[in-house]
Amino acid sequence: MIKIDNQIQEILESVSDPEIPVLSILDMGIVKDAQQKADHVLITITPTYSGCPAMDVIEEDIVNAFKSHNIEAKVDTVLSPPWTTEWISENGKQKLEKYGIAPPMNETMDKKALLDGERIIKCPQCGSTNTEMVSQFGSTPCKALFKCQDCLEPFDYLKCI
Image 1: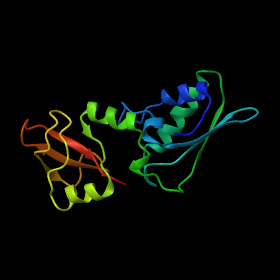
Image 2: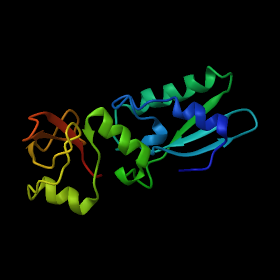
Image 3: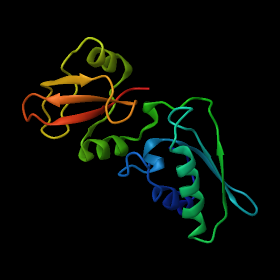
Image 4: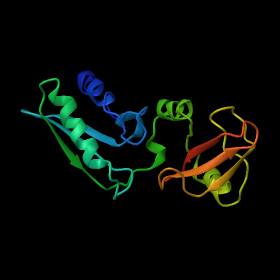
């Protein structure tokens, strides 16, 4: 987590990811920097992928969140280094699971689950690893669709990127 002023942090924590509204943009790890300038706050963000359609919404939400506190904000989007699921905070991973999305594992385990079919993805509803992949792609391209064989519930797994 980057070190930022408490007020700026509180405002950024109020900005949700449009695709996973239980996560803030800080939870997602897309905020790379926040600097207080003479007449505005400059927020630097990195998209989860370069063609992410939510980035315009996120930028507008950031500006509006600061505006509601009578603070001008400007947003700078950078593509390098590219975002990775490793940037999701531990708190964010817990929120994902409570929301019903299996959080990403490390890259090695991810490949074992998605390519080798190993039953290691934990169902966010019941906690079982008796799960199977239904589709490489879930509700968005960054998710895979799984089904728990114990509780029979379908769920998304956020793939490692």
